[in-house]
Image (cartoon, rainbow, N blue to C red; front, side, top):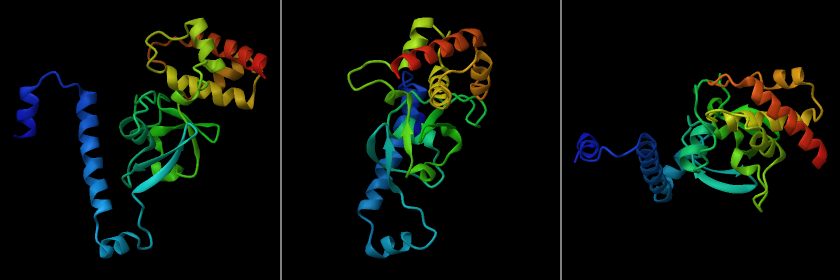
Length: 209
């Protein structure tokens, strides 16, 4: 049965489910190739300049072993291989900030980094902010209390940018916070509420310190 036949038979398949299925199938096939490759193939792939496919990433305090393509971005790995869908794809060209994550405490666009570039870095996504007991991070709590977003598609990226900014400057002015968040875009243009949430987040962060 062809791919067209499959899609024609089941129109209920969502775009996300389809993409995740394709990537999962590719990962399974490539993992099998890795595990059952011959010694000669192993030596060839270990040649100078070759990129190791199976890598270990430090994500939200856990060591995650994952099969990564040489050209794969961190955003793709997080969303479709590790299931951390809080990292959103907006523009996919390092302009909107929806995919922002923290690398060693500093906000970065996950869509513009190759996964192989960050294997020795500490990666924090929106899923890693709350405590193990379920208590929200001060920034998350502030956003909740202020109802800071409308559609909230951009919220994870903004929240990660707020966390990074407050680690550097826990007592910002509203103008300083606006500058710190200037790399993130809100398609609902709800910036006033977002900044109010950020200032409340700064207050909560100082109280917790």
